[in-house]
Image 1 (cartoon, one colour):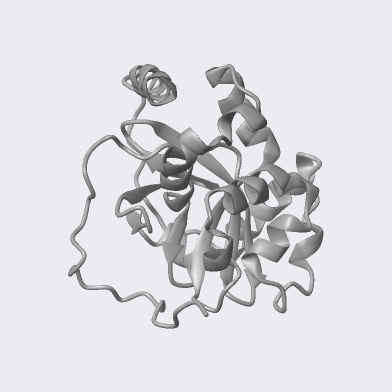
Image 2 (cartoon, rainbow, N blue to C red; image 1 turned 30 degrees about the horizontal axis):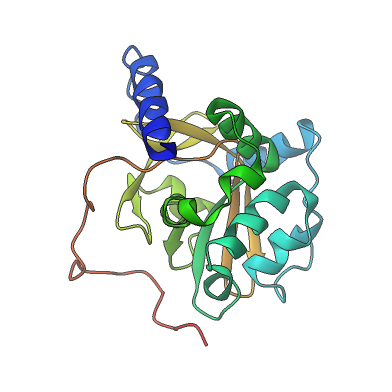
Length: 219
């Protein structure tokens, strides 16, 4: 039932995007990249873990920041905590609590109602769509047309002046509102929505060439 509800929701979001113009990627200057982080301050978001966070893992950054408490709860529920707390270099597009609340409101659920055993595989697949192998700072993200994720689906990247959005044509795009929160096992970029993967089968094969720096496995 929940899967059907999410499917109907994503179809509705796709219809809203029909009239949107396709954005073209372009290089951003360092000044424009810095404006992404300034946006978070303008929205009243403070990422305490960003300063001196190189010794903290991605999971520790999420768990120790009140803006990411739902994300941290979902990661542990989906048994992805070891992956985000290990040594393998990863890039995480991290939805804020506000982002999760919007999705939960659309579904008519609370976080507790979503995070039940029957939904574990669904939650895991959504979370894996927010994780890419390798350490990709902001400059690498904006230079990419698409980024492959651990869910075997691609995140598409759209750049328009100083605005960067990630997502896909089927289910829509969300804004990158803060970048380059460096962790010992990768980097975190903050987004203002929860990305839903496309309904199609995996976008790439397991033997596809991988040039990301993700050779170090979890302990």
